[in-house]
Length: 175
Image (cartoon, rainbow, N blue to C red; front, top):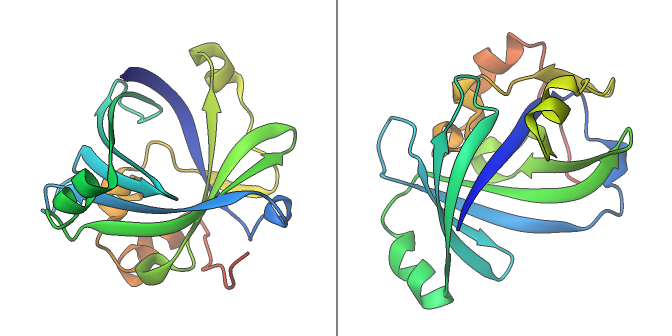
């Protein structure tokens, strides 16, 4: 299934209060191939659902991606899981921030302290008109280092310097 994803990604100033009591799912993303560059192939375990997605950038700023997703069963997922050690583990919370549906990713394990907030849009006009909520720190949509395929396999300390350029401070605690 091919789908155009229109999305913008922001750094949080703090753990958003809107996620308190919000529905969430734990996600394990594995990026293939296991190398230093940005892998476009993602193997995902989202709760008890499994999929493989190829993401192809459609714009230079990373805000538009063509996604081709194949649903997998658990056995298929487990057979592919060992193909790479480039992983991220996070809790994704579904919340409303300043009236907009948001996905708040609270990273765990090696990237604990990183909190990203994504907003998805139905069309380019809506995406382009969107104003960053005051509770967030910075729009990092065009920043390659923050893409899942680049975060995978890294420790927080490896990206800390780039985060500090935006005034980001490691967020303690977990919702």
